[in-house]
Amino acid sequence: MAPAAASIVLSLHSAFGQIGMAAGAGIGGIAVTNGLLQYLPWIGALALTLSVAVIVTDHLFAKSTSIQELEEMRYVEK
Picture 1: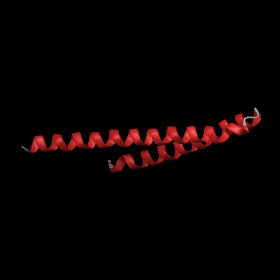
Picture 2 (picture 1 turned 90 degrees about the horizontal axis):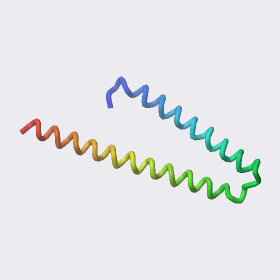
Picture 3 (picture 1 turned 120 degrees about the vertical axis):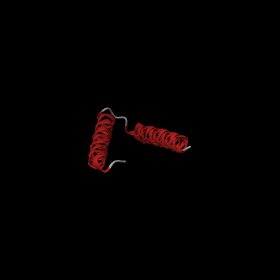
């Protein structure tokens, strides 16, 4: 990562964390208001599953991108 992009990445990380907390509070509030407390653990499990899926997908894309960059560098060196 370029050093100039570090502050942008940190800002985005913080912003998405705040958005996630706000969304969780909002969804939890809707569940409590509508008397869906028995489903709250399932809603949390769904959110966790989606988060893990996003993390795994991001990791796979980042890994494939770095492998492609390494292969391109090897090709240029030859």
